[in-house]
Image 1 (cartoon, rainbow, N blue to C red):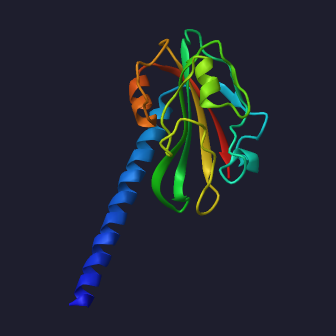
Image 2: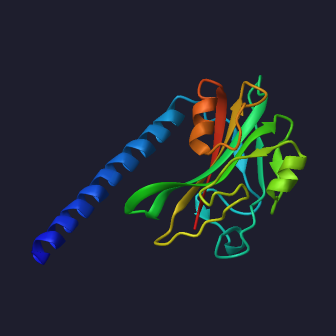
Image 3: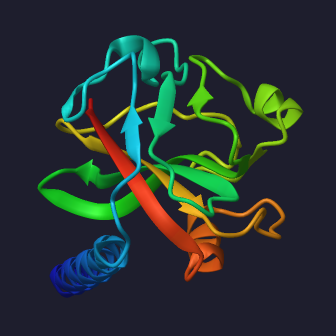
Length: 194
C-alpha cells in the first residue's frame, strides 16, 4: 500500500514538473519571439559591467544588492517614455528552467532620462517621476542576482515607447509587457551574468 502511494506521488510530482517545464519553455519562447519584431537599435550599457560578462558582487543579492549604473542612447524619434526590465530566465538552474524571475520593473521613465545612477532606490526614482513595478520579492526596489544553482544570465532591457505613460497601478512585468504591446518603437539589451 505504501509503495503504491509513493509511486503515485512520484508519478504526480514528475508529471507536474514536466508540465511546468513545458509551460515555462512556452512562455519564455513567446517572450523572446516578442522581441524579434521590435528593432534592437537602442544602445544600453553600464559603467559597472560589460555585456555578457560577470556582474560584480556588490550588484548581487549576495553582495550589497545595489543597482548598477545604466545608460542608454540612440532612442528613436517619437520616444515619449521608457520601460526598463531586468529578467532572469534561468531559474532555478540554467539546465532546469522552471521559472522566469523579474528582478527590476521600471516604467513611465521620462524620455529625457538617459541614465540611472548606481544604487538608485525606488524612492529616488519616484522623486524623478519614474514608477516601479512589483518584482519577484513582492517589492519595488532592485533585487540583485542571487542564483541558487549555476551561473545565470540577467537580461536588462530598455524599451522606447510611443506613449507618454502606461496607465498601470503596481504592475508586474507581464502586465507591463501586455500594456506596452504595439507601443514599443525599439529596445536595447544588456546581459550580465552571476
